[in-house]
Image (tube, rainbow, N blue to C red; front, side, top):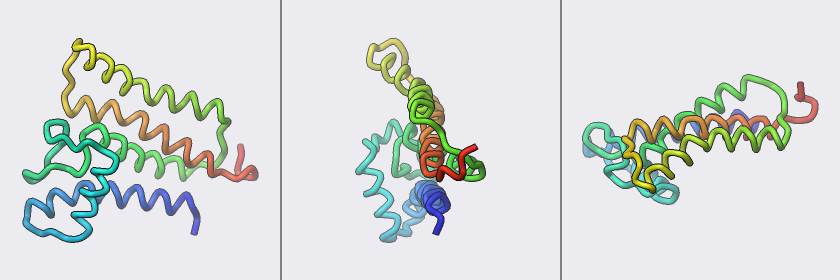
Length: 148
């Protein structure tokens, strides 16, 4: 199985699980998969209710910023998997730094008490880093013969 395809499929399935779990929970349909989504989310996310989106009256398994990362990561994997070529380590680092800037700036400004962000803003600041990480991952998997 192609590793890029496997990673892309796993990312899309995780995104779908994030979105479907609160709906299942709200409708009283608890499953091992639903509970696993919340447990997995707790391993990588603070899951604070006030910093999370809710669907059907139930909280998503991850906060708004993590949701943005996973959303754009899945989209980035789909987009980047359609293109061939590798990327230099310096370009990869630059892309990740630029992608992380919106998160770094808003978190710093929040900590300094200069701004108060909403969940939508938190999600939006996660989008560039998730997409950048997906592109870097796919390009790092490129074989030298795939290079442009």
